[in-house]
Length: 113
Image (cartoon, rainbow, N blue to C red; front, side, top):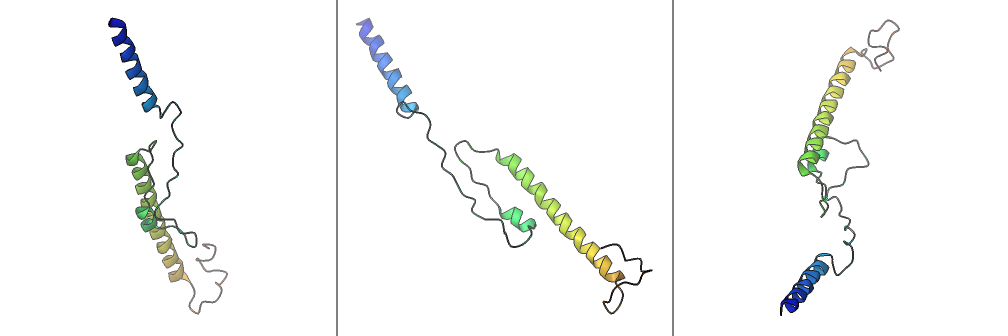
């Protein structure tokens, strides 16, 4: 009777192992997920584009908090860059000669382009 119980336990444990391994095979390939919001190809990125992006998750996944931190920093740097460019363009426009012609040789705004 003892051996019957040992054999029955071995069959149950072996069956559970086969089920856990997917019928004796390896894990199936991960399904390729797609990003819901695509990044624009026709224009430069801005903060809103980065805020709207959500990366797909799979069984093997990623660390959401780390990816979100990177995206937050990237968005902040894009916003800073855009603000700084606007400030510099406004400064150049303020120093541009009236009439929109080419700058005079002694013009301090020359060489800032």
